[in-house]
Image (cartoon, rainbow, N blue to C red; front, side, top):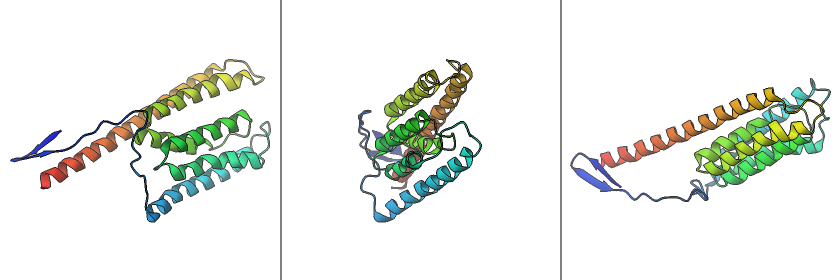
Length: 196
C-alpha cells in the first residue's frame, strides 16, 4: 500500500490475515501488562460472585448455589486474563461456563458479564467467525434447547424474541467498536507517516 503525504511517498506493507487464525496482537505481554490484564478480570469476578449471590436471594425456585456454581461463575472472569493472548480460549471458556451454569438451573444473575466481555474482545481481536458462532449457538441453546427441557410452554416466544434483539445489539455494538479501533489505528499510522 502506498501512502502519500505532501511530497513524500511511503510504502507500507499490508499483510492479509487468515480469518481462521488472526494474529495475537498482544502475544508476549510484559509483566506490567500481565498485571494490568489481571485487574479487570478480578473486578469482574468479584462483581459476578457478589451479584449472583445477591440475585439468588430472590429466586427460591432456582437450584441453590454450591461450589460448582461458584466455579462456573468464576470461570469467565478468570478466562479474561488471557483475553489479549488467547481471545479464542477466553471466549470458549466463558461460553461453556455460562451455558453449563444456565443448563444446571442456577439462579440468574450477572453471570453474562464475563461472556459479553470475552465476546467483544474476540470480535475486536479478529476472531469474528468464532464470535458469530458463539452468538448463534448461545441463542439456539438458551432460546430453544434449554426451554424444551423446562416444565413451561415451549417455545417461549417472548424469550426468543428478546434474546434475539439483545444479541443483535451486542453483535452490532461489537462490530462498531472493532471498526472504530481499526480506524483509530489507521489514523495513527497515517499521522506517523505524515510526520516523517
